[in-house]
Image 1 (cartoon, helix red, strand yellow):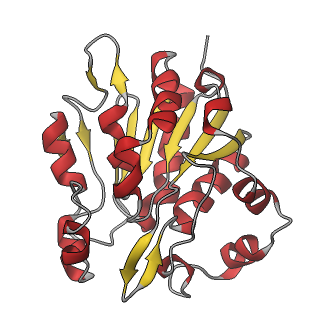
Image 2: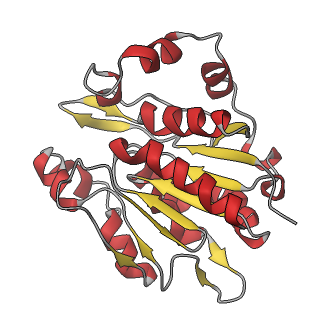
Length: 238
């Protein structure tokens, strides 16, 4: 039997000063674009964070990242996306077995809470063990340390190829010093720790994703839509 045509999008609850003192948190388009993709594909979609809260990433609200119809949807607090985002359920009330796709949206703040987000990790593990797709974009792969394949007792990305936000981009954005103060690994460092192969596109802002079995990962905010579309394709082939 095919996994359920339902998707759950993980949202970071963490926040910290990053962009010249402005907060990092949920990178809006990394949740909004997958939400749009899954809805268009006929999925039921839910949003959930570890603490039931979120702080929007300052950079993600700037014109270069949020404009046009996306901006309208973000500002429409009565629309479906904002209603679900602003009223997220308790993480422990979400049954991962009801979903065919788990999608970890991000923002730099995901580096802080995703590696330790036991509730979100359990949802993703349940999606995986019932044969669903576990996907992540940008800093979202920081959640993979706690998503364990019961047949191997290792992370589901062990032995697989993934992508995620590049260390080069962290330097280009002049945020590396701040990130190191968090004492959390970056995405390519997580890949090495978990026994995964990390790959990237030449350009740090290229639209780039990788599908390896039921693991689908995207490199940056520009890749969120294509990553979600790839997750749908993988699910439909199962």
